[in-house]
Image (cartoon, rainbow, N blue to C red; front, top):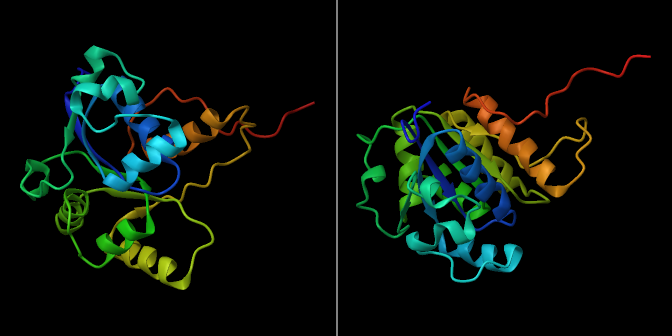
Length: 206
């Protein structure tokens, strides 16, 4: 695949688990996808707290908070999440899919009820109304009836709900491998070829 030849929209919101979103972007770029990225202010705060990343937010500093090369950074377009006039906010913008990873319960609620007060939720709303693939990776526990109802509403509207629930049947040896398991799940769902070898091979035979 030619670098940047296929486009995908990625939203990172302010749920715990910023590394899920960062890793997804890193892997998407390595697979040759062009990532249109929007990050909420709360997500930047989470990155600082959970990842120890200072000074996040500037396009010029992408390589400092994403583990990508200078060349790969050219395959990431970072938007101001307050810019609801940015081109991905239109239903005419074409991309293979949109992934919100991780998705906070505020973001889930906003998308579920059409309350699009920023670029991320507006883009997700466009993917729903245009009936294009939208993957939501919620990260919260425990879940209230309100959270569950909002996710059901999104599923009924056509979104794919992929909770951040790593599997252990591949015997992960690190937190990074647990995160890669979820990243793999999203790529599989979108039928995007990848090189994350964490598939179930069946029980060991004597």
